[in-house]
Length: 351
Ligand SMILES: Cc1cc2nc3c(=O)[nH]c(=O)nc-3n(C[C@H](O)[C@H](O)[C@H](O)COP(=O)(O)O)c2cc1C
Image: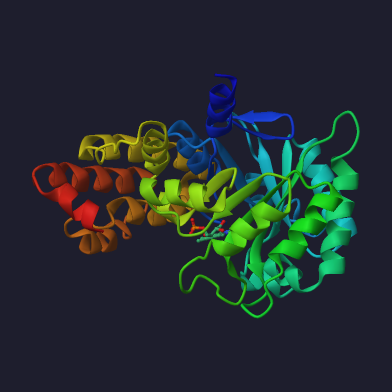
């Protein structure tokens, strides 16, 4: 009986430091995608945790409009997690502190992003090549915010290594544990892989079997069935989903349901998709304002429409709208038209 209760506890609950999460389904940080409106939407639709888009550790950028917006967590469901990126231990420590002062309850260090902008300054996954520097960064950030009565947990996100010949996720995981990192996310690709090929999970399993800190599996988790399989084969404490949630934030609800009941939820009705999208877009416009909101909404609209009838032509039309009100009207007209086609969701399922 006690064992059964403990198992149930393991299945449903996950903690990062003192923060108890609603479940173990995480939204991956995606620069330009997982802004506050999108994170909030995913959390409403069943994600237990979301990490913000990364914030540069360079102090010169702190006052930029973009960084200020990324640091805006007003009304966001807790815990608030902010991701920082950089290659200089002192700058990373300072960035962690300033974000904690602005409300971050968890600091995540990005060593997983292969983006040129990050890697040119040897940050993101480029750091994986330099283990002593990794250790200095981890220790500097943990010492800055992760110790004492107001300690904030520091987490780390990595890839499996620099390239397939240099996979050092296990060594980095050991360093992370030794340095006081509270949780480690592993994307099952190397830096050199970029997003090519398929994510592999053997390295994630090996990491989980090596260290005692919570491990999060990430990469190519696109369905409830795959989520369950990855949790099982890696033994990971949680899974993190990125691209599969673009235009499909209800994936978290679907995975939750499947993990809890073994049953599949039906694809949402087109009416519900339209409602979700309207809520998302209104929040998006409010967050970014007219000028930026109009432009940054386009990719989300494109993802919601992916696979629907004539979506390509619709997207081209929609891109010509020059204010948010017209854009929203065009989206709703398109969805209203979709409702007259009984097969419109078949397109979505095949996408
Ligand atoms: C558009 C985009 C932006 C991303 N930005 C970040 C980022 O800011 N920080 C980070 O750690 N990873 C970033 N990633 C990587 C994702 O967090 C995730 O590790 C990767 O997409 C693999 O997960 P998935 O297959 O579920 O998408 C980004 C990925 C994408 C597609």
